[in-house]
Image (cartoon, rainbow, N blue to C red; front, side, top):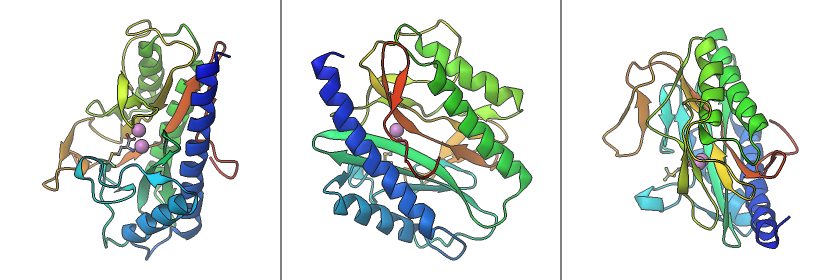
Length: 251
Ligand code: MF3
Ligand code: CO
Ligand code: CO
């Protein structure tokens, strides 16, 4: 592998594993009665304890160390004194910045017993991300990623959010290219070995449309239906890709 890729891949993996480790810590404490601020504190402390920074903190004025997006919140929910309750689902999204490089990942957490519809939405979202990751290699097109996700999701009757996308990542948190989670096979830029980007589909139970609340950050489904998201940071190789944010503990 090219020497420059090697350093970028190694450093992104170090940052990525810290981000994944923060989510493993969240997994230990998340349950009914816990506030989203408590989740934020756990992420902040884990990342700090690993001599890294939480990239979201003060990013474009974002006030916290992670995003917590429950139920009909699509993404960018701001941790607060909100208490999670039985039956809730919540996405927690963390980004660690370590030694100049970023690792960005998110997962869904289930609070107590959740509905079958929520379970199906979460499973479909995870499958869509993993299917997309499985087709990535040098020479495929960005549209191949989008169409893989969209086809899987729409087959199950859910919809793909279009207002937010994955992104190139590296020494900068968000950079080109945009990774759309919908599209047509063969469309868009050709993916090259050495590229590092996120795949982070947001999938709605109902309509794909979103709106932003008055806090300027929280994105919700317009129809108030449930939304789910998973995110990995990956690096493209000649024959596939490497997932930098895969915890050795959980999904
Ligand atoms: N982690 C989010 C992403 O996947 C970005 C969060 S930016 C913040 O790209 F400011 F809202 F934290
Ligand atoms: Co991201
Ligand atoms: Co993220």
